[in-house]
Image 1 (cartoon, one colour):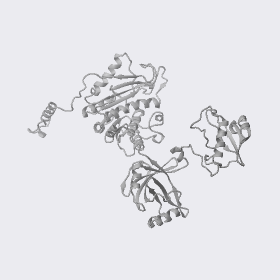
Image 2 (cartoon, one colour):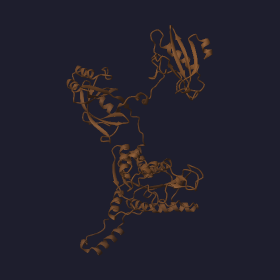
Image 3 (cartoon, helix red, strand yellow):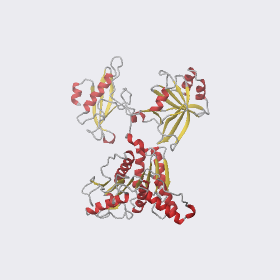
Length: 556
């Protein structure tokens, strides 16, 4: 800096000192023409790995390239900073900015600053999400006309977010579906304007006068009329603004929303996932593993669920479950259904607060099994052999894909497996072959799952955490999704995998993966046959001759 000051006649007044927070600080003056601009540069705590900040010492607004807190936006910033940049280079940049904006003709210095969507919306608590379909519909409204519309609004984190659901009686795709929890619907008016007409920064009187000027007197009256709060959308092709007009302290006031166009950037999920929307997935066990599987499947596209679990969500479950504090004391299936709605919007959830395989009445058990039988894929997330027996029976009888898995004690690893009718062995056969796979390698079985499913290790100190459970849940979810999205063209060469999360037991290192193939007969036995029907009819005739007649014959 001393060398720069000696060679540059525009730099003077360099003074070093320690500023607030023990920050290294330097004052300097930059001269241009007949003016002198006092500036201060404060070095970052992480210098030289972060840029210093340069501000006018007197607090003036001296540039069009200046942040709200007064800092100058210079050529060297956080997005292009390298440790070889020096403080004197920033001083030179500040001089170029000041001089460049003060040449004859008030030339504007080109900006290299490209604000992100998040930066542009900071400090904007009212936001209007404009989806691509809605924008196209607004562009089709004849200029100078007004139509009815329907707006949905939600308030979260002190932010009001609105979206269009319908225009002139025609539904449009909003940012969320109608009826989403915590959303409120309001009638609105859409005004189609010319591209040169003002749309932003309007007061209530400005808007009413403009509407009267284009012959929309009734809309102008509604804007001015107290007691009738109204949402107004001003639209022309490529330019949309939204307002909320309301009463405040005996007068009409307005709030302008920040319009956020949501561009259609193409698919976010594979095309084959379209098949998931109308399929039903049954999940038995909505604890740490099952809750994560359910939410992942909802994000993938499943919208219909059967959830089976009798357990409550308690404070101790917070460390691994998908649910949060709001769910404490609630049955897991009920809280998870609400979570799915929050993620997916409109979902169809059958909730069964039942312990499958537990001490339930036979009628209740039969009813739950009937619900499972109506699914397209079944996920057993309990690691309970008794539950597996029921799930396997339903899958075999109804020829459904069955997916199951578990996290091994202490979070050392986990198992994920899947069988599909006529592609892999029947469920019970597959489970037996997986057990034989472990035995053939001399690997001791894990402890009984009910003892301590998440604790283990050589001294009992290992405990599975949320991340470890999430890894196994993610793999389990992929198997379930693949079974429906790619019924005959799976991306998984093996039907079962053992995945390591840390070294120990059978694993030499984390992320080690052992595929398990299940050779042998893969054809599943059919639910019925002509022989079994004939035998059943014979038994009915013997036991209940009154209800049988000689015409009863098996269908051919």
